[in-house]
Image (cartoon, rainbow, N blue to C red):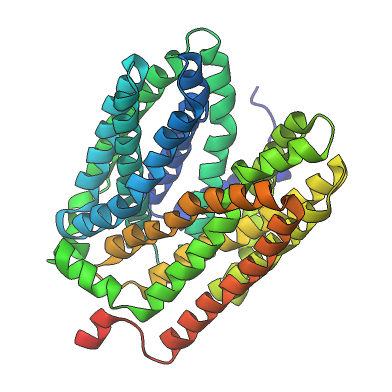
Length: 418
């Protein structure tokens, strides 16, 4: 006898079917792939510093090796995005995924600092190639009214992967330190093969044929550097990245100094961050869908500021946890909405270029920890986080000003030439 299916189960299944039919199969493929890719990288990369320190490497050298990945990816995102507009999304994504396979196999066997430095720089390049191009492809096959929702779903997928990956990495790392890197390479290889077959199945040639352009890297550079609105959005993004980058660097040091057993509390704060994103990403995203991406960014910056003010005055586990909750709400509001603004701004045929050039906001992730470390060392955590609250709210000006120019018709350099 077949088990009975109650009305709640029927409703849940119906919603699942509606969700499947609401988006192109390529969107679902890339969402699942995003979970796999982020789980794979977070299985190994968070433990890279520990892996290197076990070999007796200098802490300053370890910091330089890890930071080099973000720095290399800053410019590579623009190049990869521009090439995807001209050569097609599939080719650039396949180059990134196969590159990751080779890179993580290299991490498993590398011994010298120079080898690790080169590998992590290439890792940053591959991430800068894959991330914006996969975003551009999602947008290519999604109607305008659903794009903010897609950005929110993608951000949810990223956090699901990041939540699962470190647990797997810690488990496999207890067996052999190099094993998580080798498993990561295997997951990327399986994903590359699966993605290639699915893209072929879902008609990637036709999709790319509709969106390819003849823009060159040089002409793309002229377009984005001449785009006043884009420059303002990037400035706002850099300021947001300076604030957000403190979460994994200076906040951990500040928490450890402020309360007893601070290391345990910081691990709990990271869990609160991941769980809050997974649980609230979809409900909170409805705010942006209703009021627009600019309102979501402004609200997100206010939440970032509340979180930073909370950190500045926190002296107990509870206050730090509440502050992290508000900070995470800012993250949920801000990041998908900033992608939506870039999508709205990008001219047809240059979507990959614009998403790729958005990686220039990574400069904030590079300089943020340097600024934060200097302020924390000389003046302490309270001035640091109060200052970040003010700066973060101020970053909303750049988005608001850019939006005013966009709405007034002073949109982009490329549009004025067409």
